[in-house]
Image (cartoon, rainbow over all chains, first blue to last red):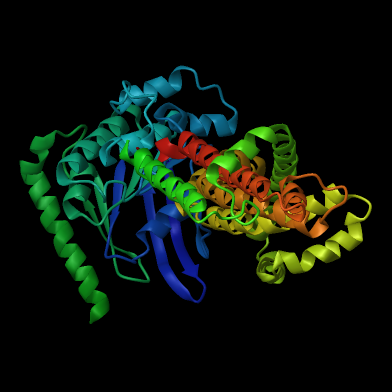
Length: 246
Length: 252
């Protein structure tokens, strides 16, 4: 059996004198979408940043299989305002000295922005900016994509459009996705598994599998599998919060 | 259109009242020359004034260039090493709040006796430097954490981060600082010339001093007109540059 692409083993994260995250273990397989949900400040973003190497774990270990390449999508798209769409997408290639060529075009095509390569971020809507950000994350052909509440600032309709897009990409490319959100519905729509975290210091309370393989259409939101998973996640979230309060 | 017509019309009315008042009350030309007399003087001494303006502008722009390099180097050092900023920023403030006119005579004594232009450049640089330093520091500090993380994530080198993130990200702050500093450099250059007084200085301020000593009040006004004209043109050029370089960032 191949080991998981991402393996987080008993990781604890500290900021100064307080524990942000205590003892988190999780794994993400090829083509799997795993989502962390939990109350604000439970450390879900910190887990993601630790996997990315942007924070250091105080204890435990993060391992990636082989030389797995990572990319990261930030909440506010994090585009460079002085560069065009095309150049923003090409940034990872430019920094690593790789030859862009058709890859930028291909990534833009994939997110449905092939017709706006010369636009500046300020000329795009929030949803389109996020598409650019996803294209930038795809251009370096990663094995793992980490997404930190990427759609939080978008309206409901765009959220689900983009969640569907990300799921399609992950499933067709075998891309492992570790996703963070505080929306239960978004989590259940996009994920194969939803991990519910407790309040600070965060740890994983429940691991819920969402039935329904492969790509999902908007209809999935009316399916029994979606309803069941949403109910389970909501209950688990409430239980996790209560556990600490009592 | 009204944006241009209104101030222009106000100026026209002001000049007409001025002209009329001078004629009506027979004001002596050495006290207050009529606008037409100033205009005539502007044409008469055009080559003088142009040469003087050229010299003042040269000092201004050299000082501005030195101020840019200095402030950029300092701002980068400050943003990289917090201790440096804590140690030296107060002295930058001291430099800023000390009236330059009070320091100018010292600089004249130290370097101005042998090399007036160098003294002028030092004085104008001291005046122009501070707004650039503060706006650059703010610009560097204001870079979004997420953007820095993007660069870290993709393994950007220090140099790459400087060229592709820090420099362009501070551009708006830098350009607005530059508009202020360019005006100050011009003021600094003129003040320095006044302090240098007569002698080898040959800029606009010196032209004004000389003309006023000879009671050529019309020429003083003509030089003054050229001086503020330079300031205005310089400001709008930089505003245009700002709009051209960074206008599309905010989506106009």
